[in-house]
Image 1: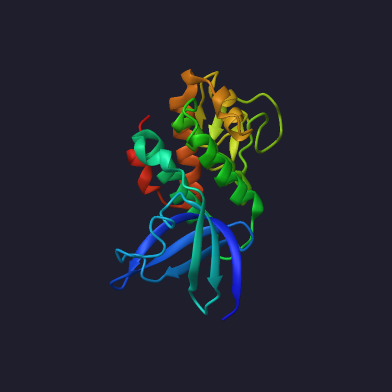
Image 2: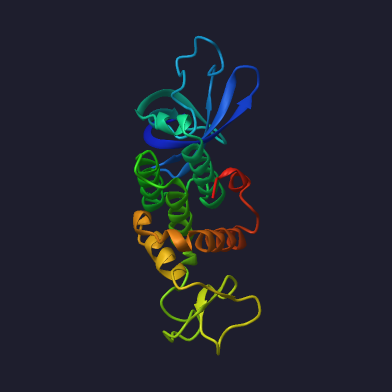
Amino acid sequence: MPLYKEQGIVLRTMKLGEADRIVTVLTQGTGKIRAVAKGIRKTRSKFGARLDPFTHVDLLLYKGRELDIVTQADIITSFRELRGDYNRFTAGEMILEAADRVIEDREPNTRMFMLLLTSLRRLIDPSSDAGAVADSYLLRMTSLAGFRPALTACAECGKPDVARFSIQQGGMVCDNCRTGGTIRVAEGTVPYLTALLDGEPDLADLGARAEGSSLVRAYLEYHLNRPLRAWAYVPR
């Protein structure tokens, strides 16, 4: 089995047998991988908390047929601040769940990796708003996956005179193009979504956040074809 090095962010873990865990990691060079950390649940494990969710780690792995094997893990950033703040922790859980759902195994995507890392760094900033950071990540991730919503012009004809949002049609639509199920949005909602999409959640309009967050959720779940479990725990 060839040995290789990677750096990545732990998305989730799952028990395997009596002492091992399967660790899902989004890596910078290989994409999303699943690997076995042998003996990690033993008291004297050499891994300790190095492979907990959120942790940004340097890894040494053996490539396996189905699951790789972690032989060494060193922490780059623990993001331990998230575990002491309920709002930030639940927002982070939603971010990790979405990344795991959307990103395919072993498909290298540096932009997806950097988006996740940047979002976690922003999330531990005490001046940031956890909900807005999560909304920004979800909308930008959906865009990188190929479903960028149209916000400044009609998603169907390109005309700039738009006031309604359509999940199915891919964003803002004009009155001539709209079909059933469109939503007339408040004045501040599009600037809010634009700020999120530009990666500037700190500039988001507080007054439009409730409607904007609902649209982000509906848009993501439409393209995922299923809801995010963590969404129910994120304070709004």
